[in-house]
Length: 114
Image 1: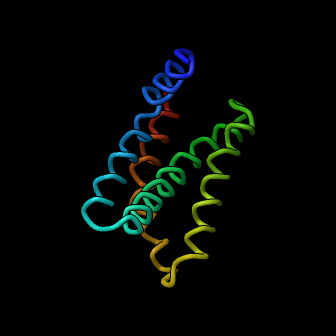
Image 2: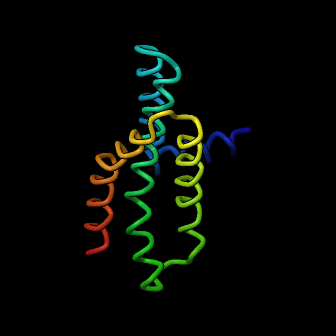
């Protein structure tokens, strides 16, 4: 049991955005509703995944990393986007992922310079 908790703790330390997503979901769900919290968190996660996928794709094209590392973010983007597309009446809400992808995209591109 300690090994599982240690692995989970290490994963959360490496990927702090997951922790902040959980906090964001809790705050928005408590303030408004669970549906609004899931919508806002999904848009936020989708934007972050789009921003992280582009630098990973560049690394794959330069043969610095394997194609496997690109498949998980793409799968996450597809699952979230398809879920939103099927459940939302207004499809234009998906455009709100663009402001969330810009900071992660810029950070990823700057990390490629190193």
